[in-house]
Amino acid sequence: IVEVADRLQDVGCKAISIHGRTRAQMYKGSADWKPIAEVKNNARMYIPVFGNGDVNTPEAARIMRDEYGLDGAMIGRASIGYPWFFKEVKHYLKTGSQLSPPTMEERVQAARRHLQMAIDWKGEKLGVFETRRHYTNYFKGIPDFKEYRMKMVTSDAAPDVFAAFDEVLEKFGNYQFV
Image: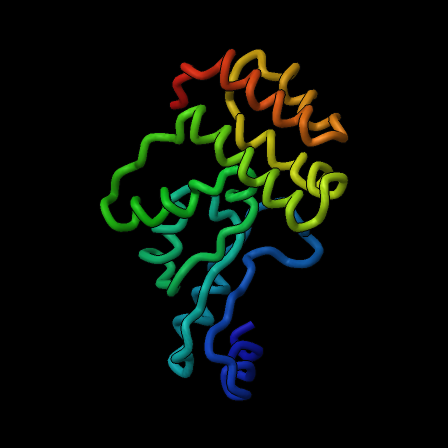
């Protein structure tokens, strides 16, 4: 990996992002950041090196930066249905403290906006279908939520999903996330 990164730098790459999992691992197992750090700590390497894989907490991003010496972290699955993750990481890296989780109203507002943007971009059918996978994370941790999640992920019509959002806000509006 060090030799490949060297060659990429030599042909003009201005930065490199390396995932800590092999192709055979796919999404299973733990990412190994050590080989990424070997690339960064190569005396010849002068371009920024970003790490990827298992950055699912603000603390993980800090470890990647401070303990492995990487220039940054690529964030993927942790942000699916949870767009606040980027703000939380940025705040943690700056202050060392955790932000409070988003409120139910903020979650519903984001889910609504997400669905509407998907509809505006791809049409109702595809927009409704493609946003389904995000609702689990928008509303993760709420007890007795299955009925509402099922409405969101089985409906083919946008008005039904928006109505489910209204129901969620009415029923769980005061829920406190921890």
